[in-house]
Amino acid sequence: MDFEFMTADTVLPPCMPLPAAMLRLPVSSTAKVMYARLLDATLTEGAEDTNGILFVRFPIVELAAALSRSSVTVKRSLKELEDAGLILRVRRGVGEPNRIYTLLPKKEGCRDE
Image 1 (tube, rainbow, N blue to C red):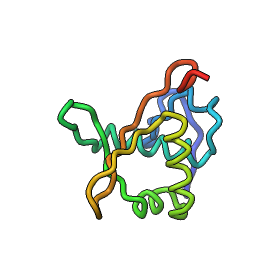
Image 2 (image 1 turned 120 degrees about the vertical axis):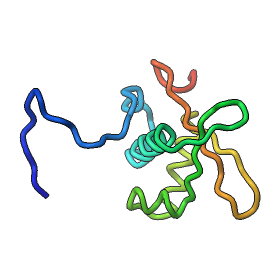
Image 3 (image 1 turned 90 degrees about the vertical axis):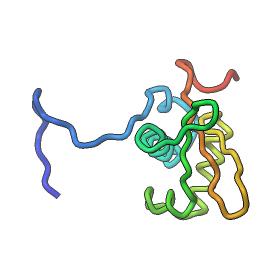
Image 4 (image 1 turned 90 degrees about the horizontal axis):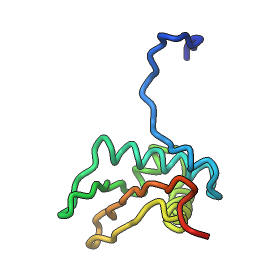
């Protein structure tokens, strides 16, 4: 892979968003990267529910492949994000992937402690 130094007019390659508040949260690095990937997917390919709220369908196997992690690690990280109040998973029918709603952290963190 070739690398180059940045200058004032350097055009950045495609990037995933990661709110600065995420850096202070007590979740694993894998969960933080997963959150950025889910947020990016929500912004670029999210579908709207009946209330106009964006969500994504990201099967465990596909998410594991996207992050180069095992399915077990992905499930653990999804639980971390859910416990931290950063995502909401809505179960669907048998064999259908869950709807994943990516929630935005508050300025001082996610949940009141």
